Image 1 (spheres, helix red, strand yellow):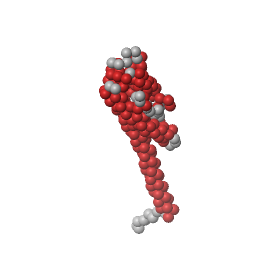
Image 2 (tube, helix red, strand yellow):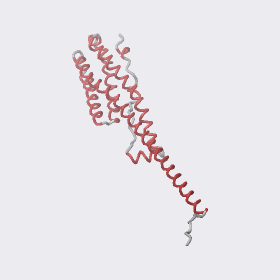
Image 3 (cartoon, rainbow, N blue to C red):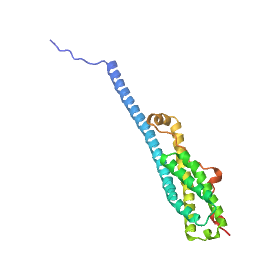
Image 4 (cartoon, one colour):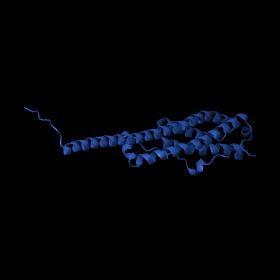
Length: 209
């Protein structure tokens, strides 16, 4: 008895090739989709890390100024007999900034920073009435140091806000927003000072006779 040999029909072979091709395309599309979504996720992570670094840079300066202010106040207190409210205002703002920073409250830091800058500007202005204080070498060094920190904080604030804006755009723009919602990426608060308080303190002008 002669054995029969099975030969698939041309239509059957074509269908199998088409099925394999479709499967390969689907796998390829799936891989592309995974790579694309991974790139979005990694981009969001990078923005979050940049934002964290930008805030850490501000935090370093805030802590440095936090440590310098008691020395400034103590030096001023030796001369400013009738200016206790001015000195207390600066120290209250210092305490508020410290508390807000510890809590990670960017909005709170911004509000307290406005009070701080206003208080320091007032302190330097009042110093005009105390010639002995203006000529004190320790006071001059402290005012230069604190003014430099104020300027550095303002500069780093701009960089932080740039990073925050980039982050906020990404987490609210499709398709990034889908990944952001899924993995807990959130909007970042801007560090804002009132326009009046943001102006650099003209220390030279304040101490010019």
